Image (cartoon, rainbow, N blue to C red; front, side, top):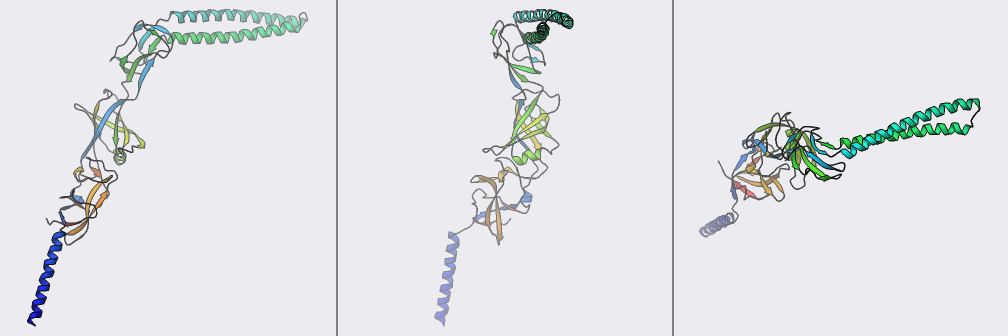
Length: 347
Protein backbone atom coordinates (compact mmCIF):
# COMPACT_ATOMS: atom_id res chain seq x y z
CA UNK A 1 0.00 0.00 0.00
CA UNK A 2 2.83 2.39 0.91
CA UNK A 3 4.66 1.58 -2.32
CA UNK A 4 1.49 2.26 -4.31
CA UNK A 5 1.12 5.75 -2.78
CA UNK A 6 4.77 6.58 -3.48
CA UNK A 7 4.35 5.53 -7.09
CA UNK A 8 1.25 7.69 -7.50
CA UNK A 9 3.02 10.73 -6.00
CA UNK A 10 5.97 10.32 -8.37
CA UNK A 11 3.65 10.11 -11.35
CA UNK A 12 1.72 13.23 -10.19
CA UNK A 13 4.95 15.24 -9.70
CA UNK A 14 6.15 14.13 -13.10
CA UNK A 15 2.97 15.36 -14.72
CA UNK A 16 3.35 18.72 -12.99
CA UNK A 17 6.95 19.04 -14.15
CA UNK A 18 6.01 18.05 -17.70
CA UNK A 19 3.16 20.51 -17.70
CA UNK A 20 5.39 23.37 -16.58
CA UNK A 21 7.89 22.55 -19.29
CA UNK A 22 5.15 22.67 -21.99
CA UNK A 23 3.85 25.99 -20.67
CA UNK A 24 7.35 27.44 -20.67
CA UNK A 25 7.92 26.38 -24.27
CA UNK A 26 4.58 27.80 -25.40
CA UNK A 27 4.40 31.01 -23.38
CA UNK A 28 1.80 33.39 -24.83
CA UNK A 29 2.72 36.93 -25.89
CA UNK A 30 1.51 39.35 -23.25
CA UNK A 31 -0.45 42.36 -24.55
CA UNK A 32 -2.66 45.09 -23.20
CA UNK A 33 -5.99 46.01 -24.76
CA UNK A 34 -8.26 49.04 -24.78
CA UNK A 35 -11.89 49.30 -25.83
CA UNK A 36 -12.33 51.24 -29.06
CA UNK A 37 -14.61 53.70 -27.27
CA UNK A 38 -11.67 54.94 -25.16
CA UNK A 39 -9.47 55.57 -28.22
CA UNK A 40 -11.77 57.45 -30.57
CA UNK A 41 -10.91 61.09 -31.12
CA UNK A 42 -12.46 64.09 -32.87
CA UNK A 43 -9.33 65.43 -34.45
CA UNK A 44 -8.64 68.21 -36.92
CA UNK A 45 -7.57 66.61 -40.17
CA UNK A 46 -5.39 68.08 -42.86
CA UNK A 47 -3.92 67.12 -46.18
CA UNK A 48 -1.53 68.84 -48.64
CA UNK A 49 -3.16 71.12 -51.22
CA UNK A 50 -2.22 73.76 -53.78
CA UNK A 51 -3.79 76.67 -55.64
CA UNK A 52 -4.34 76.25 -59.38
CA UNK A 53 -5.57 78.65 -62.05
CA UNK A 54 -8.62 77.53 -64.03
CA UNK A 55 -7.12 78.98 -67.20
CA UNK A 56 -3.49 79.12 -68.27
CA UNK A 57 -3.22 80.07 -71.94
CA UNK A 58 -0.52 80.71 -74.49
CA UNK A 59 -1.59 83.70 -76.61
CA UNK A 60 -0.39 83.44 -80.21
CA UNK A 61 -0.47 85.62 -83.33
CA UNK A 62 -3.31 84.92 -85.77
CA UNK A 63 -1.96 86.89 -88.75
CA UNK A 64 1.41 87.73 -90.26
CA UNK A 65 2.83 91.06 -89.17
CA UNK A 66 5.67 92.84 -87.43
CA UNK A 67 5.28 93.61 -83.72
CA UNK A 68 4.87 97.40 -83.63
CA UNK A 69 4.49 97.86 -79.87
CA UNK A 70 4.51 95.55 -76.83
CA UNK A 71 2.34 96.91 -74.02
CA UNK A 72 2.95 94.50 -71.11
CA UNK A 73 5.80 92.76 -69.35
CA UNK A 74 6.17 89.51 -67.41
CA UNK A 75 4.42 89.81 -64.05
CA UNK A 76 1.95 92.50 -65.15
CA UNK A 77 -1.71 92.08 -64.32
CA UNK A 78 -4.04 92.77 -67.23
CA UNK A 79 -7.80 93.21 -67.57
CA UNK A 80 -10.02 91.43 -70.06
CA UNK A 81 -9.65 92.94 -73.57
CA UNK A 82 -6.57 94.93 -72.55
CA UNK A 83 -3.96 95.43 -75.27
CA UNK A 84 -0.97 93.11 -75.17
CA UNK A 85 0.80 93.85 -78.44
CA UNK A 86 0.09 95.82 -81.65
CA UNK A 87 1.17 94.68 -85.10
CA UNK A 88 2.02 96.90 -88.08
CA UNK A 89 -1.41 96.91 -89.68
CA UNK A 90 -0.95 99.12 -92.75
CA UNK A 91 -1.19 96.33 -95.31
CA UNK A 92 -4.42 95.01 -93.78
CA UNK A 93 -5.91 98.52 -93.56
CA UNK A 94 -5.11 99.00 -97.25
CA UNK A 95 -6.75 95.66 -98.06
CA UNK A 96 -9.87 96.84 -96.22
CA UNK A 97 -9.96 100.08 -98.18
CA UNK A 98 -9.54 98.17 -101.43
CA UNK A 99 -12.40 95.84 -100.51
CA UNK A 100 -14.63 98.82 -99.65
CA UNK A 101 -13.77 100.55 -102.93
CA UNK A 102 -14.46 97.35 -104.86
CA UNK A 103 -17.86 97.14 -103.18
CA UNK A 104 -18.71 100.64 -104.43
CA UNK A 105 -17.89 99.53 -107.98
CA UNK A 106 -20.13 96.49 -107.60
CA UNK A 107 -22.98 98.66 -106.25
CA UNK A 108 -22.67 100.95 -109.28
CA UNK A 109 -22.75 97.93 -111.59
CA UNK A 110 -25.84 96.67 -109.82
CA UNK A 111 -27.54 100.03 -110.26
CA UNK A 112 -26.74 99.92 -113.98
CA UNK A 113 -27.97 96.31 -114.25
CA UNK A 114 -31.28 97.26 -112.61
CA UNK A 115 -31.83 100.15 -115.04
CA UNK A 116 -30.97 97.94 -118.00
CA UNK A 117 -33.40 95.29 -116.80
CA UNK A 118 -36.24 97.82 -116.42
CA UNK A 119 -35.65 99.17 -119.96
CA UNK A 120 -35.57 95.70 -121.41
CA UNK A 121 -38.78 94.80 -119.60
CA UNK A 122 -40.48 97.84 -121.18
CA UNK A 123 -39.10 97.02 -124.61
CA UNK A 124 -40.03 93.35 -124.43
CA UNK A 125 -43.61 94.35 -123.67
CA UNK A 126 -43.64 96.35 -126.94
CA UNK A 127 -42.03 93.51 -128.82
CA UNK A 128 -39.08 95.56 -129.97
CA UNK A 129 -36.27 93.34 -128.57
CA UNK A 130 -35.78 89.59 -128.48
CA UNK A 131 -36.31 87.59 -125.28
CA UNK A 132 -32.62 86.81 -125.06
CA UNK A 133 -31.75 90.42 -124.22
CA UNK A 134 -34.19 90.40 -121.31
CA UNK A 135 -32.71 87.14 -120.02
CA UNK A 136 -29.24 88.61 -120.31
CA UNK A 137 -30.24 91.71 -118.29
CA UNK A 138 -31.78 89.54 -115.57
CA UNK A 139 -28.59 87.45 -115.38
CA UNK A 140 -26.47 90.60 -115.17
CA UNK A 141 -28.50 91.81 -112.21
CA UNK A 142 -28.18 88.47 -110.38
CA UNK A 143 -24.43 88.45 -111.07
CA UNK A 144 -24.10 91.93 -109.60
CA UNK A 145 -26.03 90.91 -106.48
CA UNK A 146 -23.77 87.88 -105.94
CA UNK A 147 -20.69 90.01 -106.54
CA UNK A 148 -21.85 92.46 -103.89
CA UNK A 149 -22.22 89.65 -101.33
CA UNK A 150 -18.71 88.47 -102.18
CA UNK A 151 -17.30 92.00 -101.77
CA UNK A 152 -19.05 92.38 -98.42
CA UNK A 153 -17.45 89.12 -97.25
CA UNK A 154 -14.06 90.48 -98.39
CA UNK A 155 -14.63 93.60 -96.31
CA UNK A 156 -15.54 91.53 -93.23
CA UNK A 157 -12.40 89.42 -93.72
CA UNK A 158 -10.30 92.57 -94.01
CA UNK A 159 -11.90 94.06 -90.88
CA UNK A 160 -11.20 90.85 -88.98
CA UNK A 161 -7.53 90.99 -90.01
CA UNK A 162 -7.33 94.64 -88.93
CA UNK A 163 -8.91 93.73 -85.58
CA UNK A 164 -6.31 90.98 -85.13
CA UNK A 165 -3.54 93.54 -85.48
CA UNK A 166 -4.25 94.37 -81.84
CA UNK A 167 -3.79 91.25 -79.67
CA UNK A 168 -5.79 91.50 -76.45
CA UNK A 169 -6.09 89.55 -73.21
CA UNK A 170 -9.06 87.14 -73.34
CA UNK A 171 -9.64 87.47 -69.57
CA UNK A 172 -8.24 89.15 -66.45
CA UNK A 173 -4.87 87.52 -65.88
CA UNK A 174 -1.24 87.86 -64.95
CA UNK A 175 1.43 87.66 -67.62
CA UNK A 176 3.54 84.71 -66.53
CA UNK A 177 5.82 84.79 -69.58
CA UNK A 178 6.45 87.29 -72.38
CA UNK A 179 7.88 85.85 -75.60
CA UNK A 180 6.96 88.71 -77.99
CA UNK A 181 9.76 91.11 -78.96
CA UNK A 182 9.22 94.56 -80.42
CA UNK A 183 10.08 94.56 -84.12
CA UNK A 184 9.74 90.77 -84.37
CA UNK A 185 8.09 89.42 -87.53
CA UNK A 186 5.21 87.30 -86.33
CA UNK A 187 3.54 84.44 -88.16
CA UNK A 188 0.20 82.77 -87.40
CA UNK A 189 0.75 80.53 -84.38
CA UNK A 190 3.81 82.40 -83.06
CA UNK A 191 3.55 82.26 -79.23
CA UNK A 192 3.57 85.76 -77.71
CA UNK A 193 2.50 85.57 -74.05
CA UNK A 194 1.59 83.05 -71.42
CA UNK A 195 -1.35 84.22 -69.34
CA UNK A 196 -2.54 82.83 -66.03
CA UNK A 197 -6.09 83.76 -65.07
CA UNK A 198 -5.86 85.61 -61.77
CA UNK A 199 -9.51 85.96 -60.79
CA UNK A 200 -10.48 82.29 -61.13
CA UNK A 201 -8.39 80.21 -58.76
CA UNK A 202 -9.20 76.86 -57.18
CA UNK A 203 -7.67 74.67 -54.52
CA UNK A 204 -6.73 71.12 -55.51
CA UNK A 205 -6.14 68.24 -53.10
CA UNK A 206 -6.41 64.44 -52.92
CA UNK A 207 -8.48 62.60 -50.30
CA UNK A 208 -9.66 59.10 -49.54
CA UNK A 209 -13.15 58.41 -50.99
CA UNK A 210 -14.69 58.43 -47.50
CA UNK A 211 -13.13 61.78 -46.56
CA UNK A 212 -13.97 63.28 -49.94
CA UNK A 213 -17.68 62.51 -49.51
CA UNK A 214 -17.86 63.58 -45.85
CA UNK A 215 -16.11 66.87 -46.62
CA UNK A 216 -19.11 68.16 -48.61
CA UNK A 217 -21.28 68.34 -45.48
CA UNK A 218 -18.84 70.16 -43.19
CA UNK A 219 -19.53 73.81 -42.24
CA UNK A 220 -15.88 74.92 -42.21
CA UNK A 221 -13.03 73.91 -44.51
CA UNK A 222 -9.91 76.05 -44.75
CA UNK A 223 -6.90 76.32 -47.04
CA UNK A 224 -4.01 77.15 -44.71
CA UNK A 225 -0.67 78.65 -45.74
CA UNK A 226 2.22 79.98 -43.67
CA UNK A 227 0.61 83.39 -43.26
CA UNK A 228 -3.08 83.12 -44.11
CA UNK A 229 -6.24 81.00 -43.80
CA UNK A 230 -8.83 80.97 -46.61
CA UNK A 231 -12.32 79.53 -46.36
CA UNK A 232 -13.12 77.09 -49.17
CA UNK A 233 -16.05 74.95 -50.29
CA UNK A 234 -16.08 71.70 -52.25
CA UNK A 235 -16.92 72.35 -55.91
CA UNK A 236 -16.34 68.94 -57.42
CA UNK A 237 -14.99 65.47 -56.69
CA UNK A 238 -13.46 63.64 -59.64
CA UNK A 239 -15.07 60.25 -60.01
CA UNK A 240 -11.76 58.44 -60.40
CA UNK A 241 -9.79 56.68 -57.66
CA UNK A 242 -6.01 56.56 -58.12
CA UNK A 243 -4.89 52.93 -58.08
CA UNK A 244 -1.64 53.74 -56.25
CA UNK A 245 -2.75 56.22 -53.58
CA UNK A 246 -6.40 55.14 -53.43
CA UNK A 247 -7.45 58.80 -53.36
CA UNK A 248 -9.73 61.06 -55.38
CA UNK A 249 -8.93 64.56 -56.62
CA UNK A 250 -11.09 67.23 -55.00
CA UNK A 251 -11.51 70.76 -56.37
CA UNK A 252 -12.51 73.55 -53.97
CA UNK A 253 -13.68 77.10 -54.59
CA UNK A 254 -12.37 80.14 -52.75
CA UNK A 255 -14.66 82.88 -51.50
CA UNK A 256 -15.55 85.48 -54.12
CA UNK A 257 -12.95 88.22 -54.38
CA UNK A 258 -10.13 86.15 -52.88
CA UNK A 259 -6.87 86.56 -54.79
CA UNK A 260 -3.94 84.19 -54.26
CA UNK A 261 -1.01 83.24 -56.50
CA UNK A 262 -1.26 80.07 -58.56
CA UNK A 263 0.96 77.27 -57.32
CA UNK A 264 0.73 78.43 -53.70
CA UNK A 265 1.17 75.36 -51.48
CA UNK A 266 -0.59 74.77 -48.19
CA UNK A 267 -2.93 72.36 -46.45
CA UNK A 268 -6.65 71.76 -46.33
CA UNK A 269 -7.83 71.61 -42.71
CA UNK A 270 -11.19 70.48 -41.38
CA UNK A 271 -12.77 69.02 -38.26
CA UNK A 272 -14.70 65.80 -38.69
CA UNK A 273 -18.14 65.37 -37.15
CA UNK A 274 -17.43 61.66 -36.63
CA UNK A 275 -15.03 60.03 -34.18
CA UNK A 276 -11.92 58.44 -35.59
CA UNK A 277 -9.19 55.96 -34.70
CA UNK A 278 -5.86 57.72 -33.96
CA UNK A 279 -3.15 57.11 -36.60
CA UNK A 280 -0.74 55.43 -34.14
CA UNK A 281 -3.07 52.40 -33.90
CA UNK A 282 -3.18 51.88 -37.67
CA UNK A 283 -1.01 48.91 -38.72
CA UNK A 284 -0.10 47.37 -42.05
CA UNK A 285 -0.83 43.71 -42.73
CA UNK A 286 0.34 42.86 -46.21
CA UNK A 287 -1.36 45.27 -48.59
CA UNK A 288 -4.01 46.30 -46.07
CA UNK A 289 -4.16 48.88 -43.30
CA UNK A 290 -6.19 48.29 -40.17
CA UNK A 291 -6.11 47.58 -36.42
CA UNK A 292 -5.16 44.51 -34.41
CA UNK A 293 -7.99 43.36 -32.12
CA UNK A 294 -8.43 40.74 -29.42
CA UNK A 295 -11.27 38.22 -29.85
CA UNK A 296 -12.63 35.18 -27.98
CA UNK A 297 -11.32 36.39 -24.63
CA UNK A 298 -11.40 33.57 -22.03
CA UNK A 299 -9.71 33.76 -18.62
CA UNK A 300 -7.02 36.20 -19.72
CA UNK A 301 -6.26 34.61 -23.08
CA UNK A 302 -7.51 35.66 -26.51
CA UNK A 303 -6.91 35.38 -30.23
CA UNK A 304 -5.42 38.30 -32.20
CA UNK A 305 -7.49 39.32 -35.20
CA UNK A 306 -6.50 41.90 -37.82
CA UNK A 307 -9.41 44.14 -38.87
CA UNK A 308 -8.83 45.85 -42.21
CA UNK A 309 -9.99 49.47 -42.62
CA UNK A 310 -10.53 50.05 -46.37
CA UNK A 311 -10.41 53.85 -46.15
CA UNK A 312 -7.27 54.04 -43.99
CA UNK A 313 -4.28 56.15 -45.07
CA UNK A 314 -0.96 55.85 -43.26
CA UNK A 315 -0.32 58.68 -40.82
CA UNK A 316 -3.94 59.88 -40.78
CA UNK A 317 -6.88 59.21 -38.42
CA UNK A 318 -9.51 56.97 -39.96
CA UNK A 319 -13.26 56.65 -39.67
CA UNK A 320 -14.57 53.21 -38.69
CA UNK A 321 -17.79 51.27 -38.35
CA UNK A 322 -16.31 48.86 -35.78
CA UNK A 323 -18.25 48.40 -32.56
CA UNK A 324 -17.11 50.71 -29.76
CA UNK A 325 -16.71 47.65 -27.53
CA UNK A 326 -14.06 46.15 -29.85
CA UNK A 327 -10.86 45.44 -27.92
CA UNK A 328 -7.87 47.08 -29.62
CA UNK A 329 -4.41 45.71 -28.82
CA UNK A 330 -2.19 48.45 -27.42
CA UNK A 331 1.06 47.16 -25.91
CA UNK A 332 3.00 44.82 -28.24
CA UNK A 333 0.57 45.54 -31.11
CA UNK A 334 3.49 45.62 -33.57
CA UNK A 335 4.64 42.14 -32.48
CA UNK A 336 1.28 40.39 -32.77
CA UNK A 337 0.40 38.46 -35.90
CA UNK A 338 -3.06 37.76 -37.20
CA UNK A 339 -4.51 34.61 -35.59
CA UNK A 340 -1.89 34.40 -32.80
CA UNK A 341 -2.96 33.32 -29.28
CA UNK A 342 -2.19 36.08 -26.76
CA UNK A 343 -2.28 36.72 -23.04
CA UNK A 344 -4.08 39.85 -21.88
CA UNK A 345 -2.50 41.79 -19.05
CA UNK A 346 -4.66 42.79 -16.14
CA UNK A 347 -4.87 46.50 -15.48
